[in-house]
Image 1 (cartoon, rainbow, N blue to C red):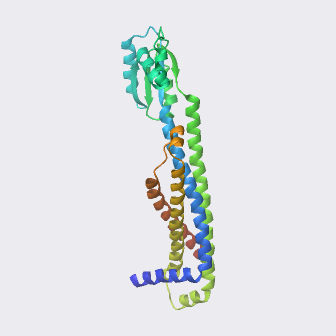
Image 2: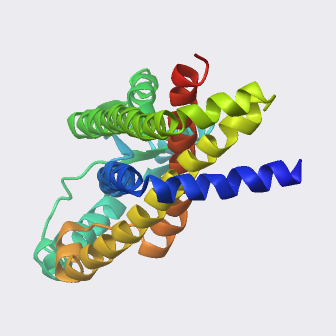
Image 3: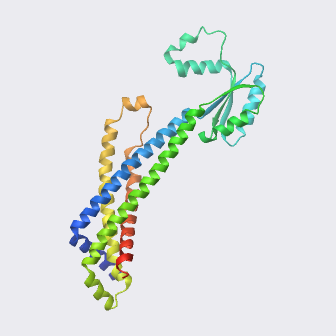
Length: 298
């Protein structure tokens, strides 16, 4: 068993070298596909991270209370909302606390301009932080059943756009990945097909002397895997260099202005390399299987 395995692997390297022109062409083709896939993967991951960060700025609903609502009633409403599974945290906020937060977060160093504001125009309110931004509509619907609420404020249009954009990115990534994998499998299948044709007479003799299907097919399977692994390692190295340059140039003031947090290169590449190797092995193996089924079963 081990000798057969060793022979298959050794023969796969020999075949790859003999058919080096087509092997190199396949490696370049799959590398190009994985590069496109890797760049899109980097963009998609960072966009999703930015969207998740942006969601945190819009995951709070403010239920503005009427003046006649007492502190006890407002606190009771917050307690009841805290019991909701879609609510992460709910608390009662007085108009004085609201003005203080507004001064610090919105006005910053110019907050002193609000010192003379009298009377305080802001209402008492119940602040609700949802567990998931997609649950905002459901929470608002439950809030609307309470009496004493004058207005419910939350960024519905922004939330809907963020959710739609995030969904479109995921669908686009899935379609592109499926297309690139299919093209790569076809490329490997064509390479293996040429090797099969070149060794047609040898394969025929092997079958006539009693060689098993595994013994005949294994070298072609490993040849596809070798091509896939080499392609994945090359493309992962190039992607690492590209991403490193991107992180080098897009930093500092730009990140501060955009309030963007990019995925660290170490974390990105530690995950991407395994994804690429898995894809490379799968693409190579599938390409070999497709080719062998079409040409070795004849």
